[in-house]
Image 1: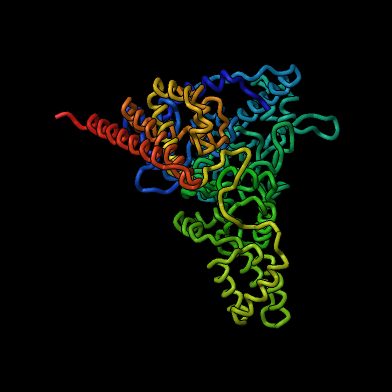
Image 2: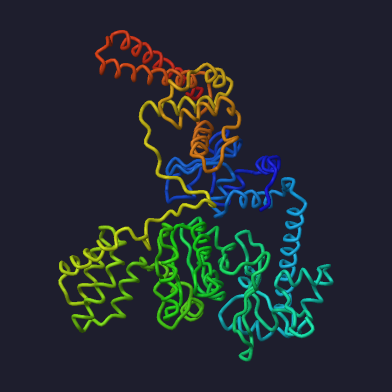
Length: 603
């Protein structure tokens, strides 16, 4: 994997326009000299609690505690790891990334891979031109139109057509300077069994580019146009850049909507995904088949914490949902099922009933456990006592994964109603079956999937006690007035003055990074979010000697109050401590009054 120099990272950071970047996700308005605010893109809210410091290039939300730098923002909104976010921002702001010096063999391997990726990009463009410009592709255009797909969305997905002649693509890419070996290594050509002659792998087929999260073409899925062609669907073979089952169709296009909405819809076929996007469901991706792999589940976890399965309502589609749940077990993904009518797929539904009908079905998706329960009830023999026993036994593992909740009681009532048994009896039997299943991995659990590759959304805001709030307010003023802050921090005994562990770490870090608070921090370090909060608060507050003095007094006052509590507990004299506390309060009140006077408008 390519690594980039630290200088490259800093040049990208310097090039980022934070207002421009964040403004693509939420409407911002100026709220001070060094602050913009808007509605948080990471949680629902009506009153803005989200702010950015454009100078420091940091963001923070006071509602959900999400915060960080430009790289973290892209990781969260685009579903990328740090390297992907770095490359995304470099592309956006025109910064050339310099790789770390590599061993000759590694450098050669990287260059070869880059050549294959360039070849695949050119091939995708060739297929697109052939679809829309050639007479031969007229039946392909007619077929796509019959599925209700518009040219605009087909072009967005770079859908193309591979001509029927055995060497049309070969000649085209050779003219572009690519060798036979590169064409073969990219999976675009195969050799005949006899003389080993090279010929195009894809012919007379509608072509769907298979891309990574950055939109780079790695391979192709190809649908046969004629009934005489076998197989109906043909994918690129595994090679140096494409590995079957690692990616999701359309994830590069869907990732922004999925990250923003916290949900990703999964369909089966290429045209299903494209039809859903055309219908406005822009967070839809495709499995490229019915079997979900571990790698695809990992990809889904990076996109969003909630997965809505919109798979065909036939036996194969239902089995695919069960496999998906088994693979997703323990991933902390919230699985839901979109109730498609039997005998339909998403593309058919959108074409016949329209976008609103599909949106309504997505809005009425049900928890995966409900789907499991209803499936067992539908498949079981509910006419006999033995059949009912078998259904309840099969449902034991399902109910083992449902904590006490309204959903659990609702499903028990459903089983009781369908089996014509009392809810109390059904609940008792299912509880015994659930007890035997304790310890198994959940198929459906709370949202918010953690991932080593993706920036993990922040937890709920921390509750700070009075001392920690005073420590935070002091550090905010140190950033707002860095000259005063540097002197004060240098003379403080941080270990004894700061009681909150994160605030103590923040104070030690700021001694050396007061001008750039997030420098030297990893994106997944909790201190990174704390620094973003402090910087955004500092941008919101006007730095002044009076405000700094007040915060410094507040820090000392908190220490005196802790000392008073300890003295009372130990039976030591309180009078001198109370006297000092009174002095500090009077000084703090004078400082607060001076700050209030300074902020009064001139008359």
